[in-house]
Each structure stands twice: as structure tokens, then as C-alpha cells.
Amino acid sequence: MASLFLDRDGVINVRIPDGYVTRLEDFKLIDGVLEAMAIFARHFDHIFMVTNQQGIGKKLMSEADLDKIHQWFVEQVNSAGGKIDHIYYCPALKSANSFMRKPSIGMALQARRDFPDIRLKESVMVGDTKSDMLFGHRAGMTTVLVGDEPEVATQNPHLVNYYYNTLIDYARSLDK
Image 1 (cartoon, rainbow, N blue to C red):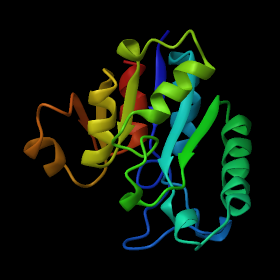
Image 2 (image 1 turned 30 degrees about the vertical axis):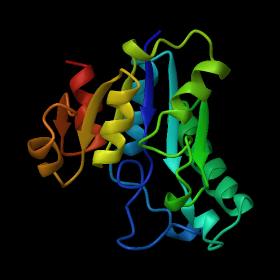
Image 3 (image 1 turned 180 degrees about the vertical axis):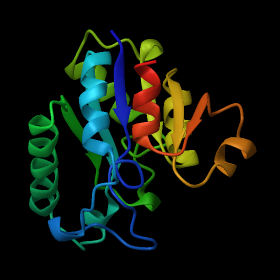
Image 4 (image 1 turned 120 degrees about the vertical axis):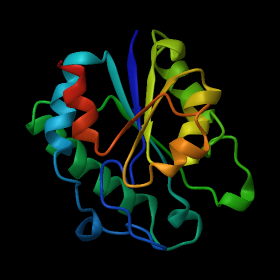
């Protein structure tokens, strides 16, 4: 079944340069995200968010803080006609080399265990960094780079199947 895996910071919400979204007030949706989520719900059997959240590992926030942000987002998505089947996150520090932390594919494999009908080769990973593209590539997914760093695609053409400026641009391409 076709599934969509979405990174969070820089794809769903505005990334805080050299910082972390640690509270709901800092979680600013990128324009068009809710419209995109409604479009994706028509095209994908499952939609997942996969996000590294080492702010927890650094003790800048708690898992309860993260849950509050994610619950609010899921409510917004549902109200807009979209869906999120599950949010996977890795709180480990980058230095821990956790298999659950992107670019390792632990979150993709966990999603496949939780939703056995997932076919990773029929799935799409959307992200804004090389790490996201590595995650998707290693899991056998089609990769879509979004955001304002197209050099990730030009420097890593073997990792990036498609590039769009924004998530809504990618979503609208599915309706054509």
C-alpha cells in the first residue's frame, strides 16, 4: 500500500535555526501544510510523521511537551480533512547513534511492524535534509525533497527523486 512518510521541522513547521521547537507557541505551520495534508489523505493509504527530536535527549523539553505539540497538529490536520496514522519520533541524541534516529531506518521498520500492509517500496519520504533523503533511500522509498535548500538535490542526485519548493507544491502535483 502506498504510504507517505513526512519529516517535521522544515517540512510541516518552520525550522528554528540552531534551535528546537520546545513548546506549542514555537510550532508555526508552513503555509499550505493543512491543505497538503487533505490532498495526501486522498492519495495515500497511510500517512506518518517521522522526526528526530533530540531536544528531549538534551532535556530542553519533555515527551509530554512533544505530545502536546503533536496532538494539536493532528487535531488541525483532522479538522482540515487530512489524517496522520501515527507519529514516530526518536528522542536520542545524535551522538547515541540510535537505529531509530534518521538517517537510520528504524522508524520506517517500526511503522511496517505496526502497519503490516505497508510496502516501503511503494512509499514516499518527504523531507528537507540529506538525512531525510538517506532515510527514504535506505528504506527503498521514493524521495521528495522540499524546502529552500535545493543544493541537497544537486549535491546528492542519487538520493533525491523529486524536488519541490514546498509541501503544498508536492501535494498539488499529485492532483494533476
